[in-house]
Image (cartoon, rainbow, N blue to C red; front, top):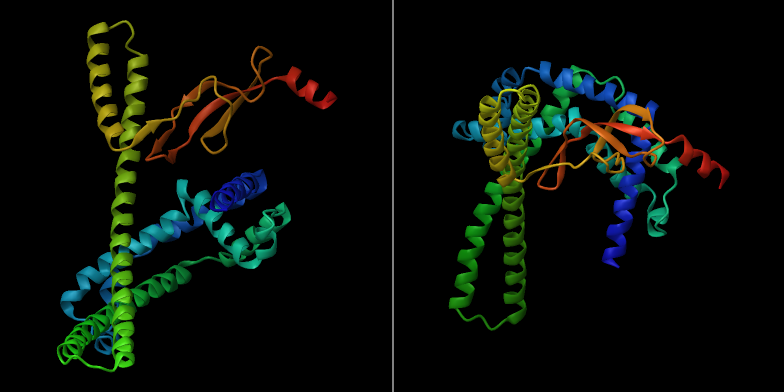
Length: 332
């Protein structure tokens, strides 16, 4: 049952991505990405964090001066994670997950039958576009406020849970030491203790996960910059075929850099001679060829990479268009 559900989710994501990459939708998504990227880049985060939270909120939620650096670091992490996911190379994955979530929430019957129509996907996409309609700096500011307020609440209740946890531990030990005979009362105390203990553990896990996600994203951004250096090495090696000594030195440096990045989970996407896959490849050119199958990649213009089995950068490729294959398909 679980396997069937995973297969359906995978098929649903592919179906959503197919709709997203339709020309009209792709143009709108890329425009949305640029708008969000420009607004988030121009947003003065430091000025916002210096002004917020104000003294009244700090007093109300017991936020101290020594809490501010940690609070601002977490807010900045959430801000980057949220807006980066809706700009650049992550936007299609983010929209895909958002639409998948909305479909599961709003169309449970279709999901239960493992059959979701394209019209449902397009309707969810339109709603998402409406959410970001007239996106401006005020909305960025409001989003930042929402993130900061959420973290302030988390910090406040985290401390409250810590105090309750200590208090409950003391009371629970007292009950045990006194050997209370009333099992029902003891059971109630145990349930309350377990509930607060679980809440405390869940809040701690969520905070740790946010830190880990932020570190992983920073590492992915660094590796993304390093693969541009690999691109430079490939271009340089291609122009040094006549100079064997210099070529050997360049190749050695490229191999060392590739080996280090491979240890961090970087894997080059195989493209030449493979069938075009929209999840890994991006077609830059189409050439008519009758000697290979339709949609076969005939040349890699720029190599793509996976990082820990997730797409870091798609391969830019040239794809064959086989008129013979297309005619046979039409006749069938």
